[in-house]
Length: 299
Image (cartoon, rainbow, N blue to C red; front, side):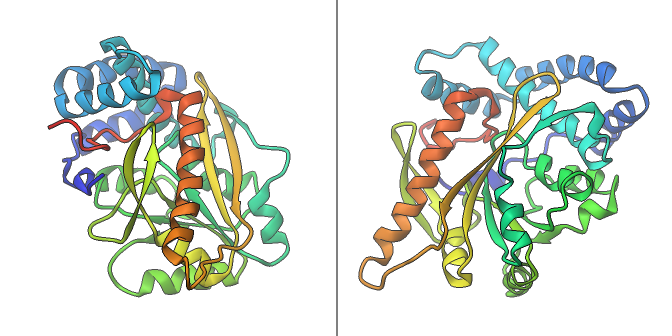
């Protein structure tokens, strides 16, 4: 897996996103959801690279030849989560049914005065946790985000609620990001980051996902080991209609990297994450939103 996801241009326009936002807020979710069908149809017809990547992924996860209808479902599922970001960010939680597990694992650590590292992915919606924590769940949280991929979406949606924007730590090449992570952890915050894409030339480790090799970033594992905080996998699965279900899976109470087997230890933790990722995307295959050549097999 390369960093070619960063080279995909943002196909949306400010006017399109602002129109969707206005419709969502003023005409209601039922009307807005009706508009998702022509929007999904547009991308199905006029985004050939994303369509091809979707087909390749669905062929793997469904274990059968995927068809255009499968791709349409895939795109529509993604569009649904983007729409729901409007309601999550503006704290209109009555529009959605969000199911938490019996134990809110990150909150239990926060109440003890200990932060944790939440390792998410482009599966379902990470926004479910970030926005929900602001009003419904008293979980102090900071999110690491690379803004280069969808700057218009980030700018337009974060403008809806400055409090949500304040939870973000921007990823860049300066040491300030790491300092902000450390400060957040020390004050009991859960720090969330996405672990299924490689950014630029960052260090990676090889793992298996859906039967083929991928590269995953090692930064989450190294940060957890250095700061001596729990590493928790997070998934906010979209279940259709207005339903979301949150999953927490403890990867490690303490990430221990031995001097003798450091690389093998990193690979072991990363593969545990990849295994959890596979479990969730097999259960909810249309929730996977990496619309690029993830396994580099399209050439």
